Amino acid sequence: MVNGTLRSTPGSVVAAPTSDTGEARQRDAERTRAEILEVATLEFADKGYAGARVDEIAARTSTTKRMIYYYFGGKEQLYLAALENAYSVIRGIEGEVDVDHLDPVSAIRRLAELTFDHHESHPNFLRLVSIENIHRAEHLTKSDLLPRLADPAVDVLGRILERGRAAGQFRDDVDALDVHMVISSFCVFRTANRYTFQAIFQRDMLDPARRDHYRRMLGDLVIDFLTAR
Amino acid sequence: MVNGTLRSTPGSVVAAPTSDTGEARQRDAERTRAEILEVATLEFADKGYAGARVDEIAARTSTTKRMIYYYFGGKEQLYLAALENAYSVIRGIEGEVDVDHLDPVSAIRRLAELTFDHHESHPNFLRLVSIENIHRAEHLTKSDLLPRLADPAVDVLGRILERGRAAGQFRDDVDALDVHMVISSFCVFRTANRYTFQAIFQRDMLDPARRDHYRRMLGDLVIDFLTAR
DNA sequence: CAATGAACGAACTAGCTAGTTAATAGTAGG
DNA sequence: CCTACTATTAACTAGCTAGTTCGTTCATTG
Image 1 (cartoon, rainbow over the protein chains, first blue to last red):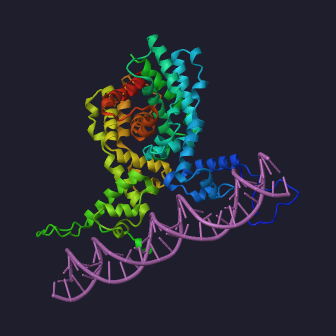
Image 2: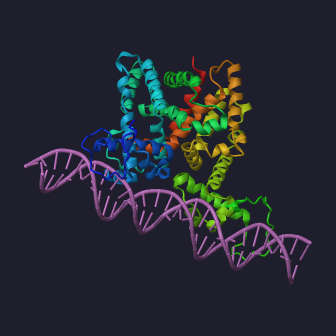
Image 3: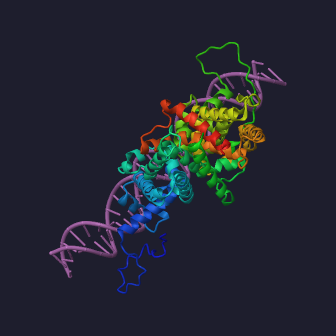
């Protein structure tokens, strides 16, 4: 992450010294933009859209608030950019599943476990999604890249399911989206609702000591369901 | 600022005067308080804590903003009151499960379906819980009635589970909280994440036409898991 | 029925917050 | 090295927002 070590001299109106010590901040549109986006992601994920403060985001970058408006246009567009960025970073689970070299049961379990790991390692993405749902996805629906957002993992899931059904191993009254929903439910709930769950039941669903238990449990849950009877 | 001392005037049941002129607004502390709480619940569930506006809440009641501070002390206390109220309204599923007259499998399915129905019919409760999780349960943990919040349904679940295990029907590597988590995951995800899910996959998880499918699916999911092998 | 305190309302305020202005410094192209 | 454009900064502002002030009205009670 970029930290603002080089910087300072707000009032150094003095002409740039001949000797460039490297201390002077170089102009770099891409870097400035990226830094704003990164800090904004943290702030929005932390406080929500309404709770986030543009001034706070600016303060945590090495640049100024004016740059936020220069590059993004406004708070809402910045939020959308952070959300879109989070979605685009999160994708690509399907590439890690070696579908065709695993039997359907193992493939499903593997996909579920990858989803599980993925959610656990991207807490900010999950928080942004929760926040966006509070807003009834009003920002997401405006996104230009919405059509490309559909998780490719669902397609992979569909193909595995088909193979499993063809082999007579899987039930045929659910589709890929249903199964995806079950897997997501479990993973999302575990991280998104961890705080109230812990407050009420005194059990931390993200306790590393329970991690393997939940991981196996999710796999069993999906497999037992698909192969029942 | 010391003003906020909460009036502990309990339900000093205002003896209703016989002569009810009707049109003139009667003074009624209990009713005013209840009205504020109800409107606040809607506003907070709708916009989140930071997004909610005290002025807006006041405007939607038949009283004024002053009364909010008079009865609740401030925005945060009002929010907590709304959250606590939502939790207390939501409880009591366990009473509807006739545990002892159903075999373990049927009892579990019944409990799951009741939870399913419960979540579907209390969307605002779910939204408040999501919002509170965004805030990392910082308000809930301050609540005095936190100790009494643990869902009694979990106890009922525990007893059913025990019977099922004793009968050799259920697996024994999961406890009541684990099963509760699975059931809640499904129900919560379906309503709390419906918006982004719909935006991305064009499937409304709350479509009445799919309701029975999901209800049965949840029952199968839990039962197949518990009775597997 | 007077006194006392609970219940109420209108208007006010201090501080915050998204968004803007206007001027300046670096940089690329000629 | 000049011109035109991009990147950047500090300071500003209009409007909002939680919380308050102060005065009034109603209803109970001694």
